[in-house]
Length: 306
Image (cartoon, rainbow, N blue to C red):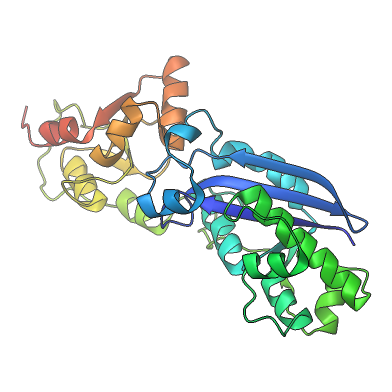
């Protein structure tokens, strides 16, 4: 009767915008360990999401990013059975969050306490977490990640007790509830850690044959981060390439400029930084000759003939 229950809360409509995570470890049919952490999603908070879970951008300023928190979470779910209520949502969040920093999924099996509850207590008028928790007398502050994870864990424990089963797999088999293997992020090209859009950017060609070798971007390697307001990232990359730059999807030691879209620049100035920003700042501190350029300064540079 060992498994791990998880729950995520998100800052906005993006599955990768985790702002809170709750993890409950169950051993021998009893809650053994509980972990909860706020997460800095490095993205904006929608009013609707905050209204649901009560988490604001201010509250996560000092919190770890998902990439920073992941090693601890991975150690708890790897090679385990994972449970979540409406697991398709939580697994989608995990998949997209891992994809953001090109991390493969660990091996685990997962099941859904919503589907389990439907089979074990079919008489309930619905099987939302709050409904099942209320029926079983489980205290619940809904949309608190730890409380939701704990409720999913207790529902699963109670279902095993009711059906006299000794594992989640046995319970699932008894009621013909599907167990799934661990999620897998979208396939990458061999030896590449970039998404399709980034790979397309890297192979752009200049739109004109003559390039100005005195332009600051001539021969420079440029990476973009954040959403640009004035144009698409692909269009911005083409303008940079027209100046003789090479545009890439990932920051490395050859990077010369990180261009930050205006949508994220204000947050950057407030101390809210993407993984790329943090990496570039760290490399600048180590002495690498890199610059962080805002969208408007970038546009002035690409439109200047020098």
